Image 1: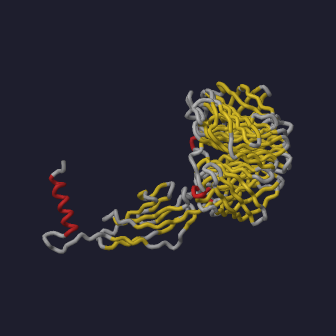
Image 2: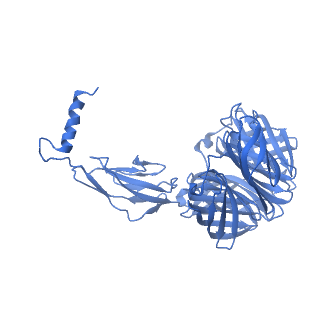
Length: 568
């Protein structure tokens, strides 16, 4: 029912718009003009003054918006009532913001302008956990730690654990510096009593970074993670966790471990089960352990299985993510531990999945990536799939796959078998969630570990448009290792461009411009060619997780396994 006041209001408004009693009076609508700013892009953390003029109104108050939010917010930046825009420290997901203005007297009159936001030193600001693993002078090397970046190019309060062939150096204090380009590519230097570690990295719009060590004679890849503030107050763990550790044993032979354990808020693991691939010999077994959390978000743990006891340090990214590194003389393991979430007694593999793994086959570097779909909610066969394998530079593609899988048990552990033109490979996996898992090869002679993800749907070349952070890493074997980080711009029409830094067996390339093409001939798999001005051409296959995350497998020598992750 319309009230009397509303009955009167509606015709009055109509009369104001059309004119009353035959008169010529009409509603005067305020108009707003937004002055074009002097620049089209600004650096993160800086400011830009906007101005707007209102006409046809005595009320000259301007309402300001950033991406539709009145006054903006911490993610897209803020704007004052006077039009002073303050960009966020990290560029937003699309690399730009829309600044809008409207008259307070007539808010529906809106005018807008788009401003790009580029990366800057301020984009690395706060506490970060880092993890790197690879080789130094041909021998195993790994490091993990924490540092504070101050947004001005300086690093302080660093603490790191280094596991090298010369021994373990736990809890080393370090300071450092860094420099970030406008495209999010940066370099950093960590200086401790044990010397200097130099890294190259590429940031994304979530503040994370893919990274690689850039010192002569060293090839190591990893990540930088912004630390959740809650990690500083965490005193215990109380959840099931999934682990994925890679590296080598005391003799330098490849060793990969995936598994699951449960904590109950005490310092003891309630239960643990793991799959171990030691130099190509796989076993499934229980393990036990204890842990403690100390200062500076650093903890220690001891895990015991049939092979003996291993000591670890770990750094807390958040309550659901820990980075581990071995700190004894038994080997050189490191990796991530992730809280297991969302699983039930009926959780299984349903739908489409993509996976990748890197390691060795015999003495040769090994990489694999693929996609498969299931056709049943219980243990059974695969509906379809494809797979690419690169063993020592010998690449083989399977356009079609057959295979089977088992339903995960209470620990989230399951297995799958894939058969293609290159033969049959078997894998164990532990679900981190219904959409993600860690995987390990279980075939004699092949030792590779990686990840599995739910694939969100079919794709075309046009599905991918924007800037992506690139990371590739070769695997240890008879072929010298390699790594690369950088950015790649995909234009949605099959063309790519960008910049990358390559590390070939410990020799750094410097910044290389990159051009090339990409195409998706099927809805689940694509190919690309990356050509640098340094004279290198890399052929890769691509398996998308989504339009913003892609698995990449190199088809050259050595096999390179990595990712393209949407930057903006």
